[in-house]
Length: 610
Image 1 (tube, rainbow, N blue to C red):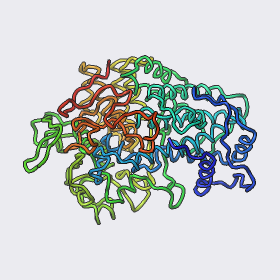
Image 2: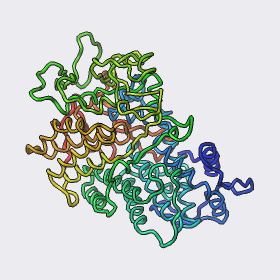
Image 3: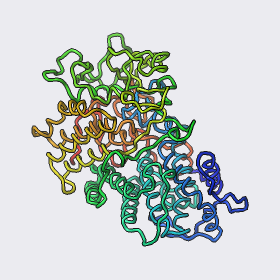
Image 4: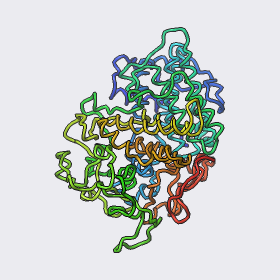
């Protein structure tokens, strides 16, 4: 790993922040020392700050104390959002089956490795979030006044654990020694920590932070302002509930590979006195700067809609919207059902994963998921219609999903595929059109927390266990997702009343059958967060609607044409490090224990209770 000069990175970070946030109170003395990262006697092991710093380093930290709030704001704002389209949308969102990429046909959506896009994600995590922001924050908190900054220190560690989980779930083994302690590795050829140990570090960070926030020292505490903490306004309890919910998410992530660890961590999350997320107000989210700064950053999904409707409804989500609640008497023999993967009469080339399983594509056959109507347009001309008037859609058109690999892409194909329902004319939060340039994005929400509890109950974790509890929480999770989108209760209940998945809980379904219902609805609720969606696809192998790239992939043999992609490759800049693991994009990460597809490319029923 190439090590940037720390002083330069930190100084550039502060200067960049000054252009987008309130730095009136920052020490602007031109003779003040530049941030000095020097540490002494720092070893690679552990997560604690067990080193000392020089007097000059301490003075430089004190000189930038007034910038702490602004640094924290940038740390949490840019977190997973930096270069979102190339760092996440064209990889994770596609692989989660959340984004029908209406373009980039032969690039990363088809499993081709794009070094610039992976390198951007890598740089943002290490150079920007870890070195320039996290390290400076925790060292300043610790060495300048650890008791006064006690809560701020542990809140920052919670958010770093969150970012770290997304990074390791993307790449697997990653460098984390020294970095987690706010220090720099002493050599360019850094050590890669195995993902199993990375998860151990994450759990330790969360455990220590939760314990620390429950037990602050008896002194006045520094608190982030509402402007600096746009997530929870500097309040401690919501941060603890987020940490508990994140802990449960990650405990379930490792349940197939380390069941004892999973149970221990899951039950700690469930038993903590602060509890998990309590409502929509606890959602971990990003609020675009456009909401409070004229000309500030836009919602990336609305922005991508303006770029020729580059994100459309994926075929997998179309099927989920139309097959979770079929009308009475409707089965696969009805008109409107299609084979999952079949060759068209005029189609040339090899098609992978041929599968005669049938799914409904006709709205008349189902109780259409109400979220579909809010999130996506019916297929309609993109320009000038949809772009100039968000209501200009064909009311008779069936919602249409894009199959990854289909060659008909571009803005003219919005007459075939449903683009994201976006209003570019106003930032008003409309009840029938979700997307606009000021709309928030949720990274971990209340509805997900209910589905996490449902799976935990199914696994026998905690005090609330069993099929009845899991079934109730499953329905509550769907209900909370509907509530988040402002869907009227009568419409939400009409859909929930007819969910096919309820039968698994009420008619003696197996735990695997019950889990499928939980995960499928959680997958719908977590949309559009591809970081989490893709991780859960790999862990659980649900939903059953998952598809391969239609004509094979462009991974240069790294991913078999009958398999789904398993990770993103390390940036090419890491190739000179002899410690870099020799993984490919077809290599499963540590907690991913099985392939989703069989040897022919057909989805196979998984075993998530080992």
